[in-house]
Image: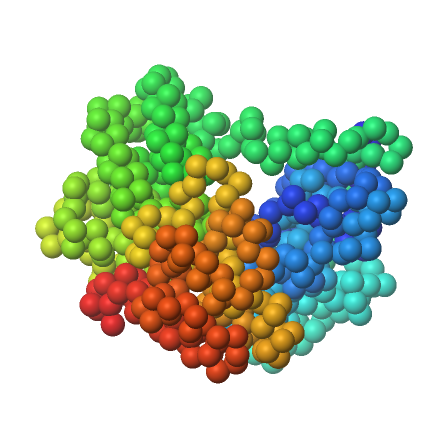
Length: 575
């Protein structure tokens, strides 16, 4: 095993030429906030984890990195059959996909917005003088509109500015910014301000170029399966262990050292609570219950060891210990709400765990809510997931909502005040029919429909390998090749359903009239998939022609819309 430094330039050049992802890797899952945080860490010269690669000539299905990062791609579109063959040397990323895909998107590629618009990275080269409420010091945005200075298109470092040195590029940027600032001089601007900004620009350009060209920021451990014996079974075991998170220390682990003196049983209590919440196949870590306790005790959601030290820290820990019986009951109520009302059983249908903290906060002050209040809580949950309410500034949001939900509310969950808060932040707050066309929301919307129709989640499976796949009711390949339909017409929520992984393998593109008739004969309730009474009663109506397909797809989409809006928009009667 080798351990070597690499330049970012070399890593980016290797992507999709010798560097690929093995088929066992999950899709790209980082939110934009995580991408910005990685860039901020690198600009601050913070170390990031080592990458783990595997060089091999084995026959392993190879997947390309995305030139434009998207969050719900068809992974089969990115497989590279020529590199997958036996005897062809390639390097697979075992640990580091999220970081490398992020770096590629920032420095060479782009991301796709929820409306499938290409957005490139622009960096404010004059930033770095103050920390935003997001906790970030350096400003980076993804946008489809070209920005003017001090915003610099990061991809130009590998394009038109690839041969420039630090001094030359920084001087050119400063001169251009100086000229613009003189034309727009405002009272209060001083020569000192200008010099400070010029210094930041030089430092930022120097760091950007250093990240790309110097072998000191990125380190790679490589398992050389060409020169040495690294069989697939052994590598698979390494992959599982590396990606399981095993014994890695998080912020919560570091805090327990400061907390145990005041309450020596806190770690055990938190671990048991985390296990309770993870009984639904989710992946809570110990930070979540800590944040819940902090917010319920009015101490803010930010987790830091300092909160548990000194006289104030001792009092906080004593209050937590004295109130643990109440908090434990609320965690149980939250778990029951997740199981009985939301039926959340998989990470694929939840984009933010943080959104559940205000629900804990509400239950802490309003235990055992009635059905009307739980319906509003369901609506809040789905809105938070669908509209990405917690995609950034999460602690700021949780702290603000504490003033709304963290008190007795005799009239039930205060959904209107919550919606007004997110409206002021510029977030969407009402499900509209247009949202049904957004591919990133596919899993959440489908799960919502199945929970409504089945009274259970399709992800609540006993056999871990049988989690549902998204499947086309009218088979994709045949609809495109035989009916001549465009992909956008076939990859449509009205044509999507869930099917167990093993059943999906057996299906093999069978036409819908035959397939669903066979299921109906076998006594399977096909109405929960088809949603429409007429075709559920007589699947022979699912003729394989364009007009029938479009009529079925659009009618089924309308049915999905009626189900979804009733659940997501309870404050307006589901309208």
